Image 1 (spheres, rainbow, N blue to C red):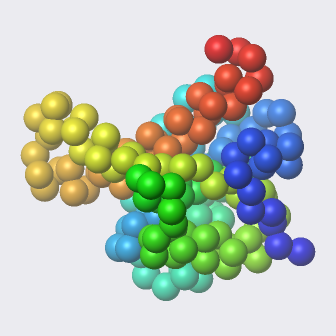
Image 2 (spheres, helix red, strand yellow):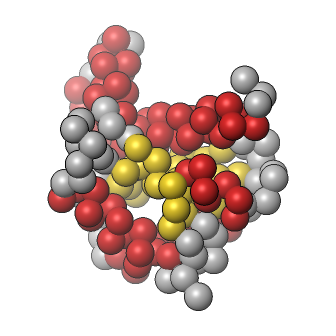
Length: 160
């Protein structure tokens, strides 16, 4: 049975109270990967996967989730500024559907509007070279996405 694909606030019911979450920023050429600590307080970068074929990409993500004892995934959903979903959001949903057939871990979709732009500004502010930014932007966007989701979950729990 495929894993459920849900908005973040609904997916939390499918995860145990503790356990790491894997955050993903799906690009056309790369996948940025971040992981949370088991208490879901802090997101840290893991790697940037150079996209090949879906099966190879999915196998690497499943390996990472196994290594990190993950209990769920958070995928950044690139919604347009007007709230509509364009081709990138549709592509993310298609990836989630295909990936859900390979894992039993619930997949949360999290609005990632402007995450890459915010990370790009931050890296520029830190005087990171253009070449280095290209290497780390997707991993940092995954951190940004996952941290945003963790902060939202913290608010829902009333820890804020």
